[in-house]
Length: 318
Image (cartoon, rainbow, N blue to C red):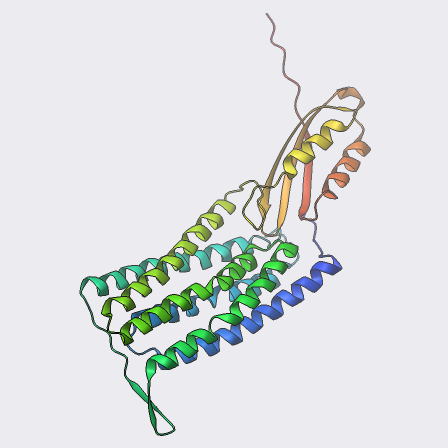
């Protein structure tokens, strides 16, 4: 049995991977602190509850990335001859589905609270003998949950492009958008303080819609990535690598016609080329091997590329 070649990161990518893992470990520690503090001051605010659940869901992408970053580089085996790179796609789908389902649940719950005209209250909390409105503590915790993710998200987006890792990219985008959740939740808390009972549920609906939007877009991206879709960049656009490979094949003086198809396999890309040579009787195996090596050198993600002959059309007798 022929096993897929084992891919090794470049020195630059190894450094990026170590920094990406460190940023995710920092994210996990930071999120645990935010989740704990928000739980303490949450009270009966639906906006705070929704923001708290979103922070809990934010643990999923870092965990998925860290798990996949260790598993996907295991060597291919007899029972897994293509390796384990697709574990990143599977975990990406799991994280996206969790966001989508929870976003829908939170939206319905918030809408029902608005429909039933529930009036949440925020009481006082004693601190060094002074009674302070709990809403101010909520706002302080929300602010603590706003700025660090934006900084961490910038680093994750940077490393995701070096590693071609969509879990890391999605996590970075979510982090950079976390300030919107905090602003909405703060608006809900202040609304309760001003006597606007509807502000809390409305803020929760806005937060849940943001979760739902992220979950839907990520689920669609993850599902299509698992059905051998043509390769896309971490930003979402289709890459022009198939066209470049086809032009390279046609440029060989011994190739008459060329067709190419590529698909994603986790971080990497696999592909096939189909060519018609000008002289079937003078096929040189060395030319095939050299062409494959040159094509694989065109992009670091292209781990394995197979080159086949387009069969001659059979002539039918009249």
